[in-house]
Length: 252
Picture (cartoon, rainbow, N blue to C red):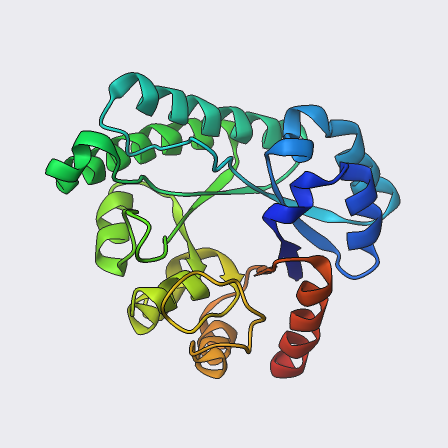
């Protein structure tokens, strides 16, 4: 199924966006922030599922959430925030949550490996909680140049080692890091896919065919090795709908 996601959506009342999105998509990956905090939109999600035939995925909160924090109280708070999202997904019958790995901040700049270590600790804790809740979790590869961990396939695999968590493959992010082929080699481990494009310098979130990432190659690999949903990450609903039309053509 082809879905859509955009941080811009959580700036608008949930029901307004739901009515608009349902005219173009059957799947919405909700970013649990702003107007779309899962704790606040349960009735709307149920309406979408039961009356509009919508399916939902969730993206854990982004703002001030750092599972790689080397300051332990903040790391614990981040894990708790993502765990709360997972618990809400179980309650609302949302089957999968995508989360960001950690960021290198503060004194972690003196020892980047510590942020990776804390990210792995958090991922293990989240994996245990998600298993108890029967909710799938996919960890997303981050773009280059934002002080994130897991911009490379090698580092993301190291963080996921020993857990049953999956990968959320983000084509645009991988393109900024020169890691497209490295991540496509892991397609059998993908639990979610985000498609958007850029020129390889920064995370522009262009239409899926507007940039230097080899969309045809990506679709070819996904057709062979991936059976899950594909989420178009767009700047707005109009560009997301345009990308959907292009993707449908490529998928045949």
